[in-house]
Amino acid sequence: MALIEALLIQGSQMLLVLALAPLLTGVVRKMKARLMRRQGASIFQPYRDLARLMRKEAVVAEGASWLFRAAPYLIFATTWVAAALVPTFATGLVFSWSADLIAIASILAAGRFFLTLAGMDIGTSFGGLGSSREVMISSLAEPAMIMIVFALALVAGSTQLSTMAGVMLEGVGLRITLALALIALMIVALAENARIPVDNPTTHLELTMVHEAMVLEYSGRHLALIELSAQLKLLLYISLIACLFLPWGLAPVGAGLVAALVGVGSYLAKLALGAGLLATFETAIAKMRVFRVPDFLGAALMLGLLGTLLLFVSRGM
Image (cartoon, rainbow, N blue to C red):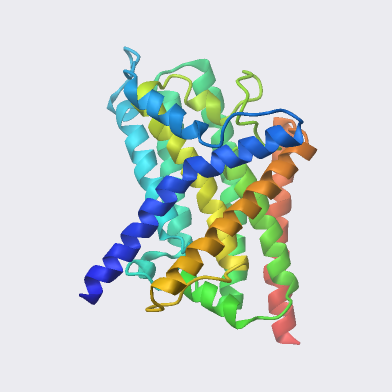
């Protein structure tokens, strides 16, 4: 009976992240529109867009291989699994043993690998352009992510997310390492989600787009799965930041229904806070040139490295 209850809670988290991902994107778009003094679309517009795309026929180019057809499903599966492993409203779930920060980064890297291959599969110039830029960004973002993992693991003594959240809840004091890791993780999150200032998710300008260039040839249900994967990825990074740096409200193992509901409420509040901060940041800053992206991500790498070194120095004193 206890196993069935644990599986139901884990399944609830998987369905929760899947249901909230389009809503998060809609809230960010709505906030950005209001900050620009525009009415903006409804926060539920992403659901309508996904439903419309699912009803349309998927048009595939003649030169497309099996990889082009399979990539949307692989990208969606890897992103959904990674997002479902991050603790949202409760810790110590039945699959929490696999919610390792390094494993989640590896799963996301696998999805990115399939996306870049799909962008190059048709052989169009835009697909190759977007794939090459995506690989360039990932080659800088992944080392920065590894340094962030090292810094946080040294503080928490583990790379398992439930354990790290528990350590943060117990209190680790004010540490410069955590502040540096937080800023670096935010920079990586912006780059991984193709958000401003690295990329503009609302533009289709040939010379500036990265993510959109790789998915221009997709349509119908294939495009719907890729769009939903991008929305899940945004929710994943906000959930990750909330789990590691704002773990308050997470229900512990066996806490009961009331604690779980409190955890869901606190999780929704954290998502709203993250959406507001992202919308404000993207409204206040302009997109940078592609050739300046390495400097931007290099700052994240240096912050992660500096945080790790400061931790070693402070322990040695």
